[in-house]
Length: 447
Image 1: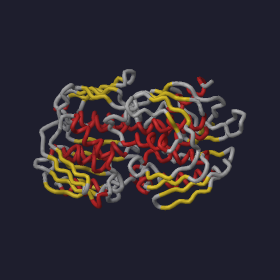
Image 2: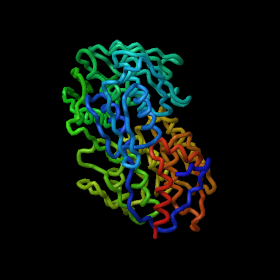
Image 3: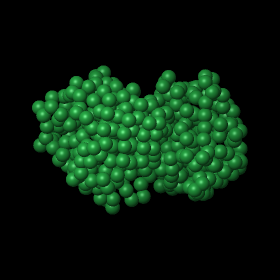
Image 4: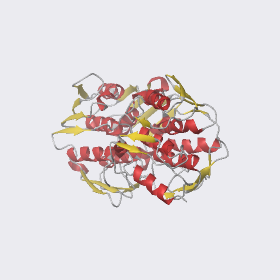
């Protein structure tokens, strides 16, 4: 696909949306599956995998560590093999870009290796994303991890000699990825590990995703209690995926943009491969919230295919997004179209993601003419007339680009002319490279 321009005017929909959307695979699941596949003792094929910046960074890092990863992008398949050759390279320099999953998962993976020296680094923005909770936990289990810049952040150097067992407390307040990373490599330790979480403040759905995937990859010697959160992991030589194949679910966070699109353009949109029965992803709660509040209709939680329409309500809502916070920007961007204020809570931790998402959302909404009350853990958005000619700053954050692009699909000027521009639309390559192409196809097919 051709590269996107530095700034992209969003063409509104002048007719109700129609069509069917096939979403990309989940980034969270793809990168977890890549790590778990590397810890199996036989080749593993990942079907429906996501091909994006973050997963390519993870894939390339595994190759540098000695694993073979064959990618068939046309078939959406990744095949991991030659696991016995992993960590036989002696040393490696791993680049993680701005991929938090890759940074945290690879730090834990390299610390659990029995040999080698590994250096991890990312872009300057990644050097600001917290790693301290994971680094401290791994060090307490015997890992030799040296922060070669600022303590608690990338870059790091790991001199691997395996992990010992014992009890460890993880501070995962900044990101549940730190707990997930430790969990998935814990079976490689020389003795059982009991993990406690500081203040029980971790966002459980992503931890549950990791635990469920560990079980699907054949590891059942783990017991978890959510109140208070304590997890015991028994050593195992490797993971085992009996069928040798794992299917990656469609991305529930990416689905949020297209679940919201009928609210903006009316019409209806069919979304495939979106699962509510035994799903791995907590972000399905976004669709449940919007349907419960009457903003959309058409979600059938017993089927993987949903035909979504605008619901009967247009009122603002109040909701706690603490367990599905990757989707809060979708609602925040659309709040100007709702009748009455919208209050989003449980989002303080998103200040430490790709950017400070709370402050960024408040800034861009104010640029759009909205009255916004920003607190540490919340945003309250009071609709005001939208300001035409607004250029949205994305802060190199894919979720800003996609959320506000959906708002731009609203025909504000009633003449089909663009009134909102997205800066750096190419940042969507992080998780959804084809986002703007798919939006254009839907616009062309609207009638």
